[in-house]
Amino acid sequence: MNRRFIDWIWHIRGSLALAPRQSSDDAFSRLDPLFHQGGTSHDRTNDTLTFRKQDQAAQDKMSIFDGGILRIENGAGGSVLHYHLTSRALLFCFLAPLLFLAFAGATIAIGKLEKSSADAAEASKKAEKKDVELPQHPIDKALGAPAPEKPKKDKSEEDDKKHSPTAAYVFAGIFATLYVVGRILEDRLVRSLFKKKLLGSEPLRP
Amino acid sequence: MTLDGPWTPSSSLGVPSKPVETGKQYEGGMDGVRVGKRIIGAQAPVTVGWENIPRVEGGPVRQFVFTWFQPTMLLALIAFWYYAPNSIAKTSTAIGIGIGFKVLLLALEWVSPRHESWRLTWKELVTDLFYVGLGYTLLSMVENYIGSDAVIEAVQGNLDWDKLAWFMGLPLLVQAFLISFIFDFGQYWMHRGMHNWYPLWLTHAPHHFITQLNINKGAVGNPVELFLIGLGIGGFFDFLPRAALLAGTLGLAVGTYQHINVRFNSPRWWRFLFNTTEHHSMHHSQDYEATRSNYSSTWIIIDRVFGTCVDGEAELLGMEGGRRMSIRETMTYPFTEGWKTMKEQFGNRFGGPMAMPAE
Image (tube, rainbow over all chains, first blue to last red; front, top):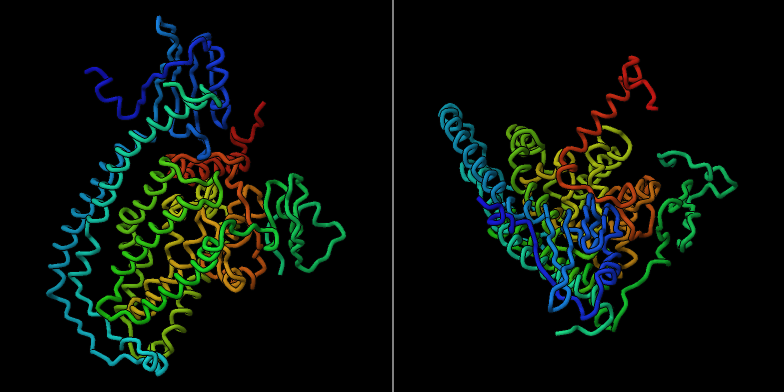
């Protein structure tokens, strides 16, 4: 199978037209500050820049990416910057729902195991606690706080809650949503970052 | 009270021995500021002293909101749990309120960031939520069996209710204060222990690699640490649901501000009693001495009592020059670092290959 069918999950590709008469040297020197961040190493030849990042700071504008290639191609219609960036964070976020679904599965399985052993033990155990009147301080009574009552502990209900997979499902959903948001957002952010750097303070060209 | 930590050479200079906060602001120089017997900020920039901490800027409405937000929310939450009918005063309500409150604070971070360098990015949000997710799923699964929950359940099974009548007879707010304070007292010593005993430090170190404070950053760390810090008597008080929920709300409406990218004009009484973003940013500073302060979670007054409180703030956070620790390293760090240290120790002792200096 062609890897490209799946690698869009964590690869971001794109291209940007350079300003007319902008040389690749000028373009790369404008982008250069982006690759002088902590944990970043880069290598530049005439028309290609490759970079790698490790333990990049949260404050790094390209922190989501771990590596990539930027290439400038000269065509008839002017120069174009092609970029191809990889992000483990995107891949991680894509896979995170699976991890949380696995947690949900484990929670259900443990719950079932516990239930069968609890059922066996239940018959032999019948400890009833006597009901007592719970005290309330006169100040609280005067201020109108509701009278305390002993928590009615329904053991089985509590055990059900203990082994509820809901939280894991919610987080699987959160990460699936975050992935979609991140894949679109980070694509746009890096595009606008390159655009801003390439054009400097000049107005955007159509 | 002597402070733990290595003695810096400059500490032996002729200086006042009484704790004095000079209030000198760091401005580029690496002299540091003397606080008690320590020099704070000799390695990384920190601001010491409340008078040097900037206030919220902006118009009167903004000033008003960011001055009164904290006390108002605290009061509102206390009033809610004090008067809520028994049918509502449940843990599930508390979880719901907790999530809602954090979403509100995330929105505040968005509209009014304290530092641009702490701005929450997509990657940071995903990473933070991963650790939050672990807390809600994996850790809670484990805690059912080997954490304090399991112990508490065993103790409660043999509980003689009459013996606790005296505590239940106290005013509700006193009960809540005692639960919160005793719990935080335990947290203080566990946290201080983590900064002073190497095996515990190994579990806590990954949390100190965060380089910014956001709402969910409290959850970032090695699961072993999260498990240890979760140990406590909190769950023991679930037979006093209202007092326990009130105590929990103190943690929510005060402790949450440890990690937040929002500036508040916290009232003087608040920052005297309670932990604040300022205190906790100091604790997370890249300056080693500064990290050895402000250990409590809610009640900073515990730090004041034991001489570990430093009033101030820092923006530049982290360890090893602000290196960001990946999730993978966070998971393995205590074990790999522990193994490395053990190899060095035993290698040296038994004359193994590790004893040979690298050349």
